[in-house]
Image 1 (cartoon, one colour):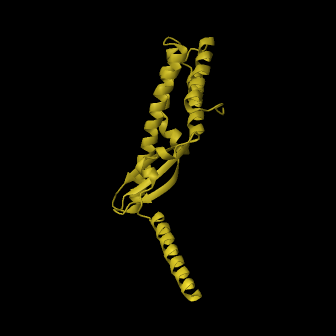
Image 2 (spheres, helix red, strand yellow):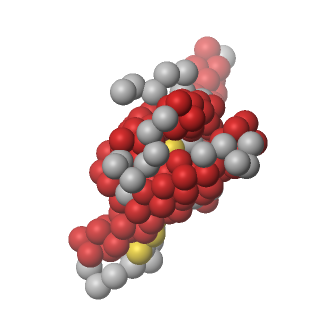
Image 3 (cartoon, helix red, strand yellow):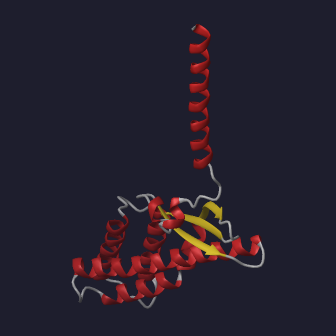
Length: 191
């Protein structure tokens, strides 16, 4: 009777162990698409980091990787451009439409032109190669880097010789910095 109970226990243990190992193998399936691919990086975004996804299938894996990284940076540049537009709207709502329009126009133009410079702080956080050979990359950039560089552009605009330097200009500078801080949720942008 003890032998029969022992054998039944061992069989049950083996069945249980084989079920557990199957679940582990399925979870570690390299062909399983990561969540960040399906959500285009949105699932990874935090208050401190912004992520974008790029994908490419070129003639070889290295070219695919480079192209996917470029696509992810393009998506980040679009996010920055949308951010600039929303910051301008926030600034306009706070300052009023006539409050030193010169600062808003110069900041908007300069920030959009400099989006690629802002992206220099981006880095690859993950990569996944689909079964068909398509390379997916998750690129991230610290939000504070973006905010501090945009605040730097405000300073650059207001120190420009063509910008009218007066008390209103200084107030426009402060209000634009506050709009940037508010948009990115940054308590104090490093200067």
